[in-house]
Structures are given as C-alpha cells and as structure tokens.
Length: 143
Image (cartoon, rainbow, N blue to C red; front, top):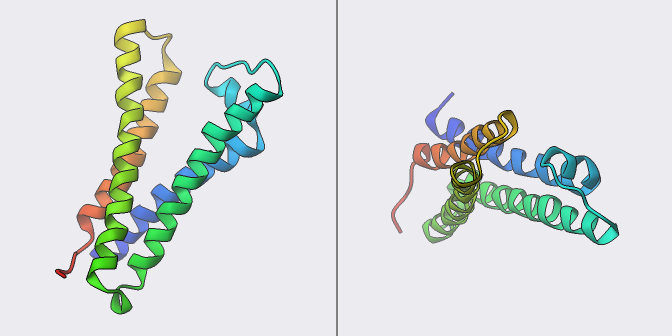
C-alpha cells in the first residue's frame, strides 16, 4: 500500500468512525444516552441526544468524507482546494481533541468510576490519531 493510499485509508477510517457514532446517536438516542450515563426525561431530552451525539457527529463525518473526496481526486485538484480540504480535516481533528482532554479533566476533578471514561478516551484518541496520522502521511503540493 502506498503512503498516499494509507493516508486516505486513515482519513476514511476517521470519517467512518464519526459517521458510525453519529448515525447510532440519530437512530438510537436512548441507547446512546445510556452508554454515557445520561437519562433523557422526555422527547426534548432525546432530541438533544439526537442533536449532539447524532447530528454533530454525522455532520463531522460528512465533512471529513467531503474533504476526502477532494483529496482522492488529487490529479485534477488545484493546490489551494487541496489545502482547504486538509485544513477542514485538521480542524475537525482538533475539535475532537477537546473530547479526551475534557474527559481527562473530568476524571481529575470528579474522579472516575472506571472503565467507560477510559474506554471513551482511548477511542477518541484513536479517532484523532487516524485523522492527524492520515494528514501527516499525505504528501502536499505547493500552490
């Protein structure tokens, strides 16, 4: 597998992860809420779970795949468009970085009940690593 193919694969894996979490949050807000120890009290609460865990993650996955589509057509892409596509993915990765950092801060401030927080931190770090790793492997052209 070429370096470029590996980079695109990692980016696709990150986008797919976001889409998977997002679609799960949209389709099953009650199960999503239970997974993160939340209890929506009514339809509004379930709607908030759908919006945050479903809508936001789905939108981020779609944005990654939109940028990935542009990056995959490298031979026909202007360098400035390629740069914007990589910056979109980098921005999403940096936003995702806030998740494990805030979770770690919560463990320091509030303590931990064990497994779920650590598991989510590992998953979030892996997702960030797939995007940043893919970007690091992606050869860039100069405008």
